[in-house]
Length: 151
Image (cartoon, one colour):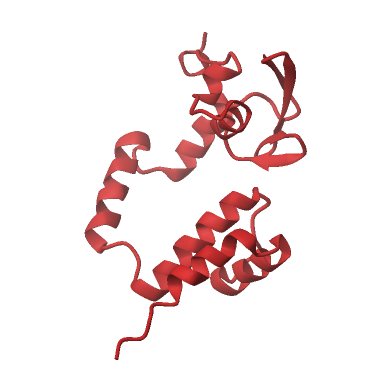
């Protein structure tokens, strides 16, 4: 007799688990402090980690392919890619303003991302999606579309 797989139920339970319990699970599963990101980020990373520990991680071939793609983007130098990202970002403390459907939206650039309505975000695109309900390039949404071309 086959036992039912408990993992789908465990993943579904993440949606209703209190945030402090999600952070405890993070500590248990990653053996590190949880990052200061929003709840959805914690849920998605925990869901992946639970499945990774139960069913196994990415295949070695997939990891190699991802590493090759990363090298194409930044020459394999993780430090260089971070420096490039930092160079392109507005200065910490900058406030980005955007009016959307008659409401002024204010985003503050933080040391490790962005903050909107008191919540941390890693990307402007996630904030733009939260505001509009649709996918947007965050740089375009906030009027920074030419940031990579130096314009």
